[in-house]
Length: 242
Image (cartoon, rainbow, N blue to C red; front, side, top):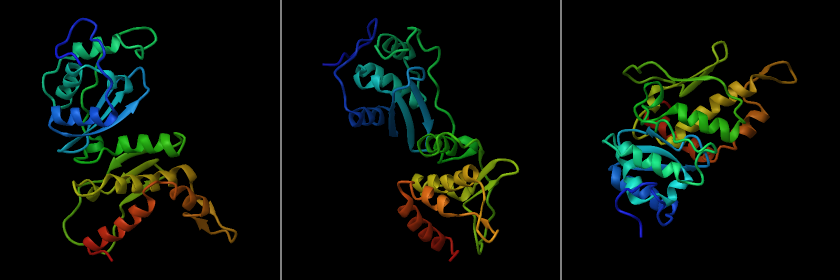
């Protein structure tokens, strides 16, 4: 049985599953939590706002064995309430997965606002994960939301663009909405990151090859590629662009 109150050393409790930990954080914080477990032994807890109704939490997998009061402290911190950060630090210091030099983490990272003024999608976080997972961290472009969108219906729209002169990817702010799924925002971002990493090829006839064979092959490695294309067609219909 897990302890209900903190004591010196913050001993570990009975192990949870990842789903149980996510559900506990969601229930205690009052927010929907998207949980990612890591093997990082330096940054133990990182919390980002994914929008007004959910949080993205990255935690060292040691927290699967955290006592209830430690999980509650993390949930309080995520919700922006006063939190027992010392309890978290004591638990981390007493875990075999703590930093090799045995030091306590100097600071538990506070929840960060979505990158570049996004209200619902943290495109910097998305880019970091795409870069590490699919591109071998070769992308170095700056990632930013575009300027405020104007009213009215347009005949065409760019959901994203890459400017090689400034090494900058700009995402259309129309995508920063509660109803736009993350997988579609990630797909558009991944598409533009491929433009940066692969550059512009050349066909046998000397013409530029922007979306060549290698580009299309790499683009199709995105897990939700087909679903994203279907969603793009539906979104364009909703925006009266087709």
